[in-house]
Figure 1 (cartoon, one colour):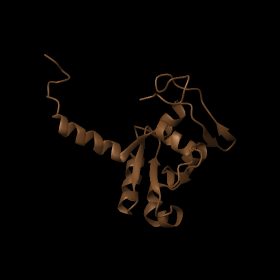
Figure 2 (tube, helix red, strand yellow):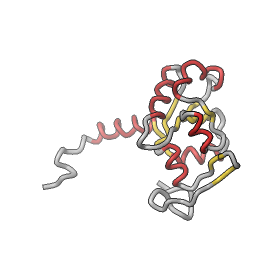
Figure 3 (cartoon, one colour):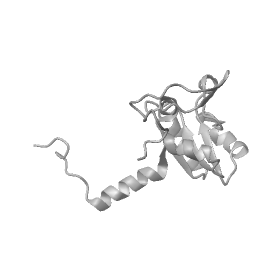
Figure 4 (cartoon, one colour):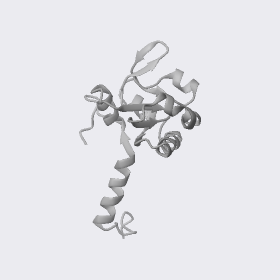
Length: 152
């Protein structure tokens, strides 16, 4: 008996549609870092956490717009032709999901950065703190220690 396939896998067309749908609404830390480093035009990364979390550290170049304020403030902060990526604390928090939903309802193309701030930090990427730019060592359970990309 197999546990993995106790419920049979979806047919390939159903599986392809499912994975394409996920990729259309999610992105990862490595890809966001690459796009921010390349200064991809029209990309706006939004930190949807509260003030205390923002002050503790945030992605370089991110815009601070807490989820509860998106509906009323987004139009004044995020250009209408922007592609938005939202993030919150990490996999144990659905704040970025709620933020992405708010942006989608306002008509923005939007993706959620899976892993959130937690995985950004665990992958050794830079964060802005009140004392300046900082990095923590790479957690080798989340990323290769020799490079910022997993080449997947």
